[in-house]
Structures are given as structure tokens and as C-alpha cells.
Image 1 (tube, rainbow, N blue to C red):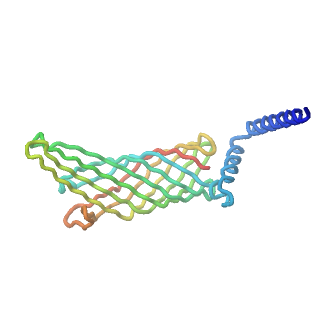
Image 2: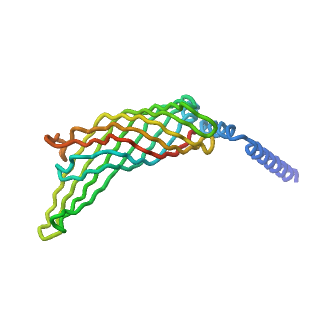
Image 3: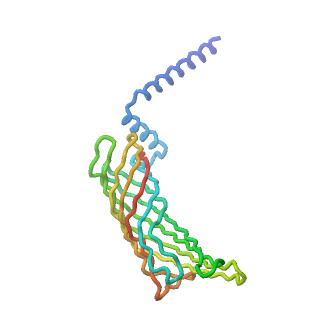
Length: 245
């Protein structure tokens, strides 16, 4: 009987403590809640330093880039002026207004066209572009839930271009052309963020990317001569959302 009474007392005590803890959490302000979340997250990586995770940020979004892919018709490929894709970043915040990190982007454009002289000959042209940049961001203005920041990045941009020409008619021939290349690239721009709460935001940014790949290689890695390069330089508009742990 005493054991049952002791068990019931412990159960009631645990329930009371649990209720008190939930009430304490409910009474926290948004800022206090963020600090608590960071503290709990840092416990997961102990014995590593607490700020290794408590000052990280993760962002992902989409972009549309105005570029000018010209002269590719010399290879039988297609020219275009807009490239779309996804962008993401991992950032380390030294302070609420200054961070560094790594940014990744990948874009793709598929173009299928029909030869004007015959209805059976088609061309399928695929461009793929990606870059990896080290970035520096500086928030120059912040008030309430709005923030304006400058963004600078530099790294490597690479591309693959595939061109397939095929005949669905009686001849049934097919032609394959592949070109690849990479170059040093850099970007600069600004972004306006709106914070739903202290850690979650959505942003709209405008950037300029300089990425002129002047030299391409063929399928076996040999540099081509007398052929145009691929210049992805242009203005980029992007929308991102992210969290700062």
C-alpha cells in the first residue's frame, strides 16, 4: 500500500512539473523562444562549441537570370536570354548583421526546335549551369521585421551543353554534340528580407553574375578551337526563404 501511495505521489509530482514547464515555455517572448531553441540545439552536438550550430543559417529559393547566349547557332545550337533554376546557401553569422558562407546554384534550359526545311528533323538542346561561391553578406539596414543587406560572392561557374539532332524520317540519322567548361565567376547585389519571426524570413534579391566561359571542351575533354564560348553573365532576380538557427 505504501508503494502504491509513493508511486501516485511521484506521478502527481511529475505531472505538476510538466505542466509548470509548459506554462513557462508558453510565457516566453519570441526572442526568448529563439534563445531557448538555440540552447537546446547546441546540446545535440556536445562537446563541440555551442556557436558551431547556434549561429548557422540555411536558405533555399529560386532564380530567373537574364543572360545573352548568342552565337551558339554556329554549332547548330539554340540561343536564349532567360535561365531559371534553384539556389541555396549555408551561412555562419558572426553577428546579426554580418555573415559568411557558401552558396550553390543550378540552372537548366531545354529547347526543342523543328527544322524549317523538313517536318521530320528535330533538335533538342540542353544547357546546364551551376556555380559554387563563397559569399559575404552585410545587413546595412534593419528595422522591425525588415532588413536590407548587400551580398558579394566569388567562386567557380561550370556548364554542360548537349545538342542532339535527329531525323524521324526514312534516313533515321542522329547527331550528338557535347560541350563543357568552367571559369572563375563573381556576383554582387542586394536583398530585402521580411522576418515572420526572429529566425524565419523570406527575401527578394537582385544580383549581377559575371560568368563568361570562353573556352569549351568536347566529349573527351579536348579544348575546341574556332567555336564560341558560353557567357552566362547577367542580372538575376531571386526569391529565397531561410532560417537562422
